[in-house]
Image (cartoon, rainbow, N blue to C red; front, side, top):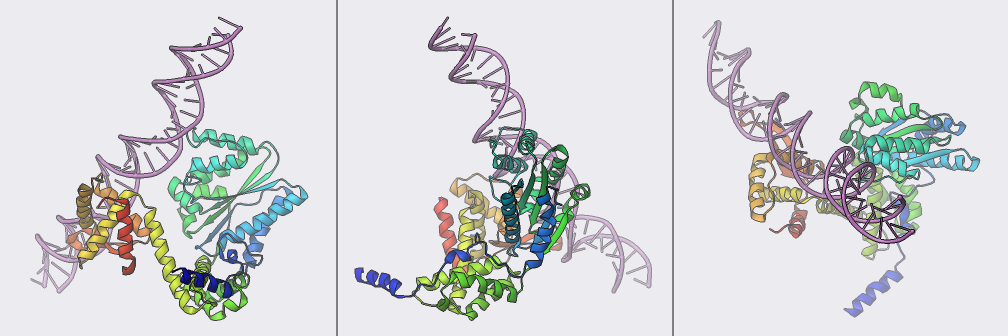
Length: 401
DNA sequence: AGGTATTCACATGAAACTATTCTCTGAGTTAGG
DNA sequence: TAACTCAGAGAATAGTTTCATGTGAATACCTGT
């Protein structure tokens, strides 16, 4: 035992390390070159440029699927702008907020409170009327002449949750302020997002739209190659592996984030196995591992009731071959609740929980009409068979089964 | 045969309710002068 | 009298329940040939 450990550590030393600078593959990393996005960078820079002359730039809305470089480009341009402004002493402030983050900016109140805090006000987490928080925010930024650029990432999530009055309120901000000017940059994953907004709000926004198309496999390959140069030792990686990662990610609507994850995890696996080089099989393993980890992570973070529902679904799927529907699940769920002494929710709520599990990608729930048989959700598991036992284990940890 | 009306078993939407957390306010209480 | 305490009103939020309405197509029912 002792000996084998010795060997393990020694082999770690004798093998040339695979990574040179792993951070280049993380999401937070901002590369100095952003391939295939030169045009968008220029577009955004052009729109924002008036800020330097203290004129209010137009509002911008950026659309594109996940991993198309929206946030990256946006951060890049705004930080360049902020740097320049700082050097020249021009009062331009940029704020980046991710609206998806729970407990930070996922409601109107929290968003405005967060903004006010960013400008140095202390705002309680609850207790104040929303109008009051708006007033605090106005006051704070209006005390001197300045341009404020607010970047709202994943703004579609915010709007779908709290309605589009927020946007309307923001357009009104500019009218209320005497000294400062506020411009919005909205980033959305949902291409249809703008169509769901009230026409009046939309016209008062009079925004510029920029669309980020997904990367194709070749572009992904360029991006990966660029990062791999920094992240890996040159001998540890070859073009084949990179192509494979690019191809896998291109299969999923050209998600660069996914491609980078794939490459990083493949490298980690190779490292752990004591290989001196990343091989294609490591990419396959990485693909599986990422999916598996994601599923486990998602399930762990679910509230108890969702877990009970998922448990019921898994068990029913195991025992029965023919398709299963909401009603079946509900019955099993009732049984589970009495067994475990959990509170029973209504079928209405279970229906919603099932839909949530579907959007999380843990199950497939398709609404089908069976004529006289009624309208139902046809439910099946979406996780690989291999993970099922692990999942059951995790759920059981949390529940007294 | 062809057309339409019904009907099933939920889905989907909206509103209202519950419980918790937090602020703010003002009445009542206390301690020191 | 100033400082302090504490209860109650009012807000925001998450998670539900209640009530109401919507839905798609297999099937039952009718019509005219």
